[in-house]
Image (cartoon, rainbow, N blue to C red):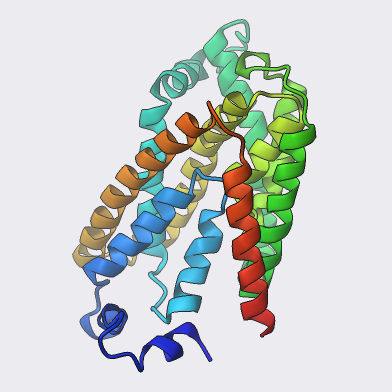
Length: 295
């Protein structure tokens, strides 16, 4: 029995779920569904709890229709805008460094940052393409997979945060560290792992301070989201109509503000506490999903 089967008999509770499921009849995504997807994506994209896992769980646990690729692209664009605005100085420096990087002027700080971001992004792009061509990405989209990865990689984050030295800041980022963090980021292709969570894990294990580990992980998200969003956007561009464009714009705006709030919350929290709250959440959610998946 699904969660929706359990709540449907309650006529005065959560009736909005039935209304949200009218998307097939109206050929558009209801506004509350758009807001829900945008908030889930915006809040979880940069917290180490896995946005893809939560988006896959949303229709599985609520009975809602899948929001579709157009909305997925839109909310990713929204979160990309959020991280670019929050880390504007670093992002601007990296973009300004693209020209000098192409000319081989790696003594320029911006060029070096742009180069390291490219190096860190290559592994996930290559493996992601392999997953896409072989259909592996679709095979991994299950509640059971998300349950195990949420639980296990939450424990790995706790281990890295507890045992990793605290001796580096973001200015110490090197080619070696970018490659290692890029390799960690590949694991995020498994739903439930969390792209930000696994790259933060790799950074902490390399000795980066918590704030700097999060900062590097967020900067690594910019080219990753940009490339993956562009590829996905090309797939759906030919089928997009004005209604879909409107829905996407609404979702993108809500995802943008939600991601900004989540980033602000996490970066402030890391100044006083560890990643323990996120680890506790992951272990709790993973354990509950295991009970759901096997029960």
